[in-house]
Image (cartoon, rainbow, N blue to C red; front, side, top):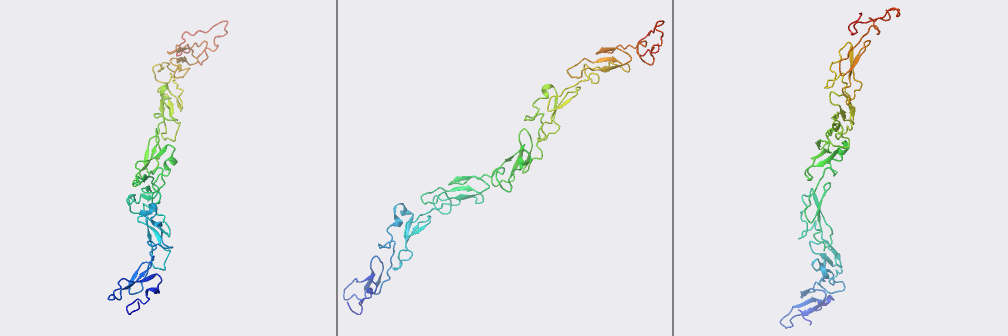
Length: 376
């Protein structure tokens, strides 16, 4: 109608809206309304309406057709129209529902769930602690994949655990770090190896260099100056292994540094003499000079006789002799010799020396041939 309170074509100024008089009673005036035509929304009493177009809810060529609520995505994402102005079209987005992240313009979003950073029932939420030792690593951020995060120990420590706190291990013998061994033990000696008593990350500088058996010795956080190895008593490639003792000989290792190999000696037991390096010794026993049960022990008195041992091998016993000294003659085995000095036959200062001549007329006779009876 045309009247002072009538719309008078106000709503027609916008093609997206229509004038509606909800009460046509003559008493009800100025109650006409501009109502936005579908798919637009909005109404205004007695004035042109400000029409909006929510492309998430409406049906229009540019509107969402359920891309954000299709299939399994119904609980993961929703449609959002950032500008519902009637002239702002084609700007709706699918937005992932927290704790998921991600959005897509006019399309289904590929939602992601970083369980290391998000807050959710299956999320890490600070379990990988302390942060100085381990960190959270997400296996897959694809939204359907949950509880696939791991606690990974930070280098140089090693260790990981699926969806749980990791037990971090720092073996200072094998790891690379300022306090680590770094091969120092083996570099100092092939006899040394590293051992870390505690592999806890907070326990550093407690590794040891240990001498490998049968050598002995250890040092904390440093090489052992010298590993001790007695090649006579221990079992090793270069050790005596009873070589000496089976022969009744004494083994002596003069230098007990493990790096000094094959220097042990077999030594003959007294009164025998003899020594050999890394092999049984050839033992000798001079029964004339030694003191033993079978030895001469002064049986051959000087100055007329002397003791001789013809075979000084320790296995050749009781073969010594008392031998008279020239010009006396005589010998006896294992006893004092009966020495004879016949001055008629011998050559000596007091001997006859052909003084009884000519031989056809006289001959020499020595009435006493004892070595101390001379000149008679």
